[in-house]
Amino acid sequence: MSIKDKYAFVGVGLTKQGKVPEMDTDGLAAQAILLALKDAGMRKDEVDGYIFQQGIGGGPHGTLPLILTGIPANFCWEMPSGGCYCLNMVIAATSALEAGLCQSCIILHATSASSQRILVGAGGPQRSTQGAYGCYGPVADGAFIARRFMHLYGLTRRQLGSVAVTLREYANKRPEAVMYERKLTMDDYLNARMIVEPLCLYDCCLVNDGAVALVLTSAERARNYKKPPVYIMGYGADHSIREIGPSTEAYLHWDGFVTSKAGENAFKMAGVTLKDVDVAELYDAFTPFLLSQLESYGICGRGEAGPFVEEGNLRLDGAFPSNTSGTELSWSYLMGFSHLTEGIRQMRGEAGECQVKDAEICMVTGLGPPAPGSTATCCILRR
Amino acid sequence: MSEYKKQLPLITAIDKPFWEAAKRHELVAYRCLNCGTFYSHPTDCVACDKPKMDWVRVSGKGQVFTFGIYHQLYHPAWKEDIPYNVAWVKLDEGPLLMSNIVECKNEDIHIGMPVEVVFDDVTEEVTLPKFKPVK
Image (cartoon, rainbow over all chains, first blue to last red):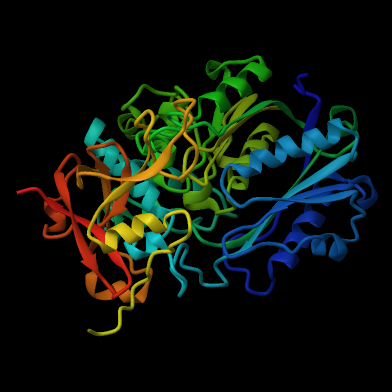
């Protein structure tokens, strides 16, 4: 049974992004929930489902944000941490709505990674096989992919840099972006310090504090609230691997993530094709992740992602405007919520100077955790 | 011998035979003896209907599949090593192993580079298989 157009986003609650040392993840989560209800014009007793995940360095604690806000939820579900799980929360929330478990559902991400001064992936004192070889941080996966793409397709650092610079230009137009006031030129990129070569500082997502809460409800109810509903047309997930079972090829996503089932199922449910997409928000924890998805979703051909971005195709005046807030690389790192939040805003016409004119259909993706195997999610939104 | 400060591998019941073999300076991989399929994680064979799983000795030869050079320090014990490499080596038999490339400058490492295993006895208990270029 298809859920096409049956459910919609009606509330977006975004706290301050960046450094917010005065609040912890529970406080941020509670604030985001209250902002989302205010945005929707929804009463507390109208929302009764709650799904959240852990962020970098931890997240909200169980029902505490519900207690802090006085939300009488029927359920409180925790999803794993990771970039694909925001859209899995959308799948879970609509499933709960479909099953009649709630009338409206909050999905939420909150993090205090910046205030906790976390070096993501840094090794502790415990034993670790990867640590035994000095392999720390998810950035390594980005470096391994970039190196493969350089070898296979001639990907250049300038092409990686064009992802970072394009997204920064978007963030420079968005006052709430963590990097709003920080320009980034190609020279800055090429001279930046290396993290795990061939990736430098600007190939990596931000680490910041902040929270966002999104409220979903049925299409019928959605009409009662303040903001124009943003409908969920379709979604899909792909947890498949390159080869089933045998050999270690299953672990080799470095020649390109496997996202085919996520895209096929999402577009099939939505009844539209890639050609109908006006704007896309693609998961971008590291620049090679975005490049890999441009190819795996068929937005450009195999090996063409580097030149595709370098030619300006992700810009507002390009062939495929994407990541229009600057997303995880330059706007705010809220795992997959960075992309879904901007997708909803584009469909509402709330993207300010980064608004894609007359945009009606948006593609949002999630990805990861990347290893082992591939984990991808895709969602199609419409206004 | 001064105290070894880097992390040691997490050795579990699952991969204990791998680390015991390394201590003997032998490289082993997990394989179905019935059909010959290699696995990266001990489990039953899904390629045949008569799984007969065991660790078997492999040649120790392979190629660099991909690699990264660490400039960012994540663990204090690696301070003197920066910049250091982490590589995935694809063994001639098929399995893929994370390791370090030794006896080679970082700038000389490239994808497809033929390598062979060497054994680094980092403590009395633990030996890490690493790889050097085939001369």
